[in-house]
View 1: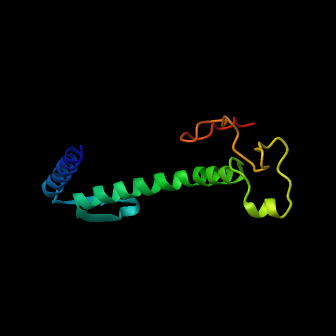
View 2 (view 1 turned 30 degrees about the horizontal axis):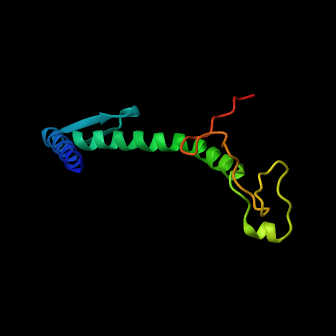
Length: 122
């Protein structure tokens, strides 16, 4: 399987390399107000790809922050030992075993390898 993966990567690299070699001619990218940029076509395609990737990542940042904030507030694991030693009582409805230690519930509200379902907007 690893060999197939490396063969696929090599094939993809050579296809893209051949594309770059076949598109070395200079092109004019015309902007507004008479501005223009002359560069090899490969650089213009690469710049458009990089701009698209950056836009996609920036569009995902608010969602990532929201998910991190929700994960921070979600109580799935037991509180730290420092809290139990300090005499802080467990939350109401928390699962405890015979020794009084907090444990995970027998069934989690969603599988641990899948993201939590989103709440509908109000």
